Length: 98
Image (cartoon, rainbow, N blue to C red; front, top):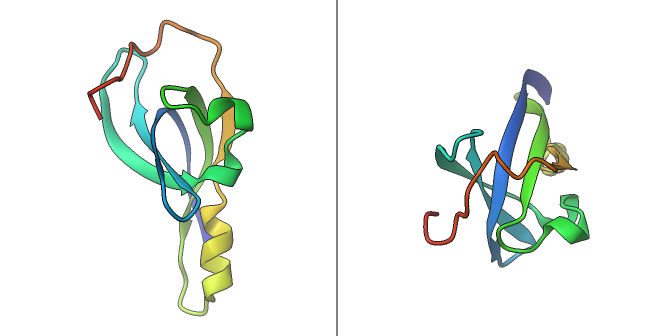
């Protein structure tokens, strides 16, 4: 697995999925939301797992290589780092917009 470009994305929890994943919707500071990611729930601090919780995802995109094993790919899914966001101005209420 090769590290790709870095990212810092604001996100909101929109739903919990079977299999230990949580769907988050990525967005910018003024409510311009779009892309959804499914990330492992275990990577999200417990106090940020509620629907509507806001967070910052930080990491590097991972680029698979020919010799990568299934375990290599699963380990890459453990990214991104999830950080708390204390700025209430960056995104309005997302209910019904995911």
